[in-house]
Length: 192
Image (tube, rainbow, N blue to C red; front, top):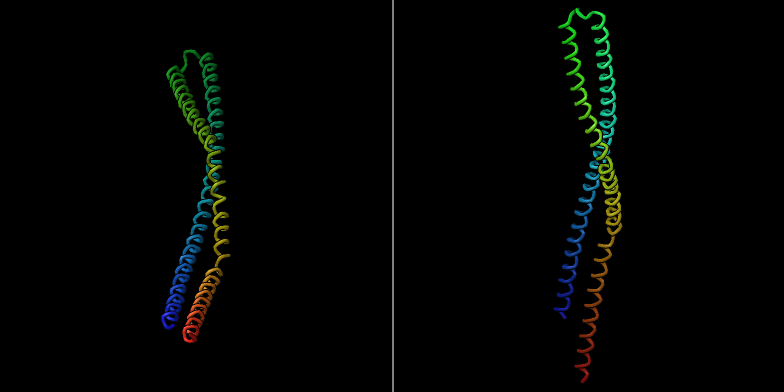
C-alpha cells in the first residue's frame, strides 16, 4: 500500500513537471509569434514603400523621356534656324555655324541614346510591377495569418491547467481504486 501511495506521489509530480514544460514551450511559441508578427508588419511596410518608389520611378522616367523628346524637338528647330541663317548670310561666320551644327548633332544623338535607356528602364519597371504587387499581397497576408495562429495559441492557454487537473485526478482515482482493490483482496484473504 505504501508503494501505491509513493507511486501516486511520483506520478503527481511528474505530470506537474511535464505540464509546466509544455506551458513554457507554449509561452515561447507565443513570444515567437509576437516577434514574427512585428517582422511581418515591417516587411509589409517596406514592400509598400518599395511599390511606391517603383511607381514614382515609372512616372519619373516617363516624364524624363517626354522632356527629352521636347529638347530634341528644340534642337531640331535650332538646326532649321541655323539653315535659314546660313541661307541669309552664306559667307558669314561659317566656323560658328559648323560648330553649332556639330554640337546640335551630338546633343541630339546623346539625347536619343539617353531617351532609349530611360524608355528601357521604364519598361523594365513596369514589367516588375506585377511581381512586386504579388509579393506585397503575400506579405500583407502574413501578419493576419500569424495573428490567427496567435489567437489559437492564446485560446489554448487554459488547456494546460485543465490537463494537469485531469491527470492528477486520474492519478488519485487510480491510486484509490488500487488501494480499495488491495483492501478487498486483503479482507478476502483474511476471511478464508
